[in-house]
Amino acid sequence: MHPRSETRRQWAVDALLTLAVVAVLVMAWSITQTFRLEGFEPGHKPFGEGRPRMVPLSGLAWVGVALSAGGVAARRTLVGYLVAVAGLAIYLVSGGAPVGAVFVAVIASIGFFRVHELRSRWPWALLLIPAFAAGAPFDLRHWFTVVTMLAWTLLPVGVALAVHNRHAERAQRRRDELERVAHAERLRLARDIHDVVGHSLSLITLQSGVALKVLDDDPAQARESLEAIRATSKDALAEVRRTLGVFREDDAPLAPTPDLGAIAALVDQVRATGVPVELRLDEGRDPVAPSVQAVAHRIVQESLTNALRHAPGARIAVTVAQREESLAVRVHSDRAVTGPIVLGGGLTGMRERVDALGGTLLLDAGADGFTVDALLPAGEAA
Image 1 (spheres, rainbow, N blue to C red):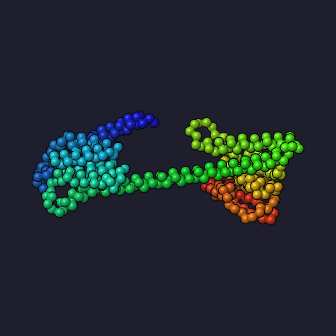
Image 2 (cartoon, rainbow, N blue to C red):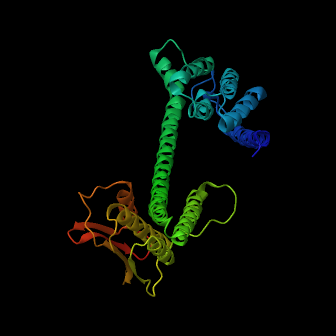
Image 3 (tube, one colour):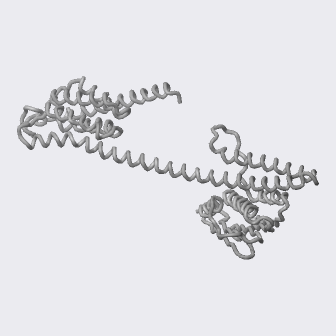
């Protein structure tokens, strides 16, 4: 929304709120004047002695208090707070009851102190002391009276402090939640880009090696390898764009999420490099959640990438099968991996994906090769 339009809207809200406050105050004042006793007023007999008596109140005081209450509640400005203090002073001097004025002070203070730094704003609360003292029906020389005045002053500030703290806690919780969501999204993007780029670069490395090897003796094979490199690069670029597409502001449709059907394309890409890959894909009859299909696709993609990098020349077997309410994913390469298993970015991301779905992941590096076994719930994560 345009800033100028937003300002006009805020002023309209302020005006409506102020009119509402004025209406409520006028009604409340009319009702209370009907039942007001002399004992409530400065300079009159104690409570209970005397007949009901109307005491006129300065219109300026009520309008000032109402306007400040409306403005402070909506915009919480220092000007509104000062107008409220001035209105209270006029109200009390004109014969208003100090106890009733506390409620207006609470409105002004809550609005003013709830969004400002209390350390720098609390001295403004001292302005309420002379405002209450100006209309106090008591002798200010008595310590009890002074304590009472201070209590009336600190009450709205205390309420404002409680509201401010609750507001700050809520704001902090919102910030923490937003940071948690942003961190999770960054991790997801890092995992996806790592898998896409890592897998594609591994294929490109193998294909370029083949092209260089047969360039002189078999130009046709070299051409096929170069075409495979080009296709792999285009696919990788498209998938990276799809991954980053969540940040777009337009309404253009996003590319489809990787699913079980796309696993065959992964296997074909690896086969094109000359690596033997056996695929057994059994999607079953029951539907598998899209998020589970995407994770299964990523597991196969990362496992193929690791086999190409760390077990060159190995035969690879990929099995994806549905078992009752679960989806089993197994990738086995028949050549042992040299050295211990190191959980780098790829394997760590794989485990995080599986954990997010409530599944299990087993990594086994034995003499007969390296195996990745994942068991995923067929439905969404609980």
